[in-house]
Image (cartoon, rainbow, N blue to C red; front, side, top):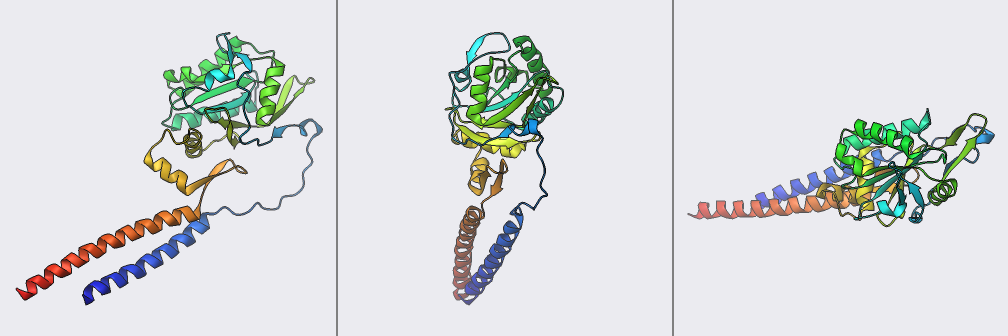
Length: 287
């Protein structure tokens, strides 16, 4: 049995060294803390613009809007069949930021295997109460065409509404904007909000460029793991949503647990193989 013990000793040492190296590498992946930045002065017109995270807040599902066909709908109409909902507030005549937000969203949706109307819904709401369903329909046609999946039309909705309903939705999800009558434009933040099928605010994604990986994991998590593959479940176990960045990051302890479990399984298998080989060799020697 000396050879078996020698093999096991070598394997154990290798496993320990590998685990240590993995820990160092994973630790190296941890993002550094925020660097110090010089103070900046916010223009007066932007002081009330931004996003306040209201995780687990209830989206008011009884609010009424008009869809792109002019039909009166409620937000609750889109929170059905266990599908998470991506909410984003824009206005359709916007010539700058709104288009970039929608472009970023459609680019991410194209990369994902998930399709609006199947695994999740998208609800785009205009913050300008003067805009009409006709404008919403034109905007929808543009982005469904860019997505390249005609079947997604049943899952991406473009709404218009009155100011009280718009403000109620914006306040519920912590999305603050202002209107500038001098330029006839709206100042607002860039981002999208993910909500659970029950209408609870789940996650925020900032800016105009959204990680397909992060959004896919967010949809899976928001749907209570009812969709996705085993690989997604393992990834969610190893990753945790960071609300300060709107991204998923590695959880070192969980990853080490998986690595440790895999190492033990491999060691156990090798012990059985080596033991059987040793027993077989000894039997042949006596023969």
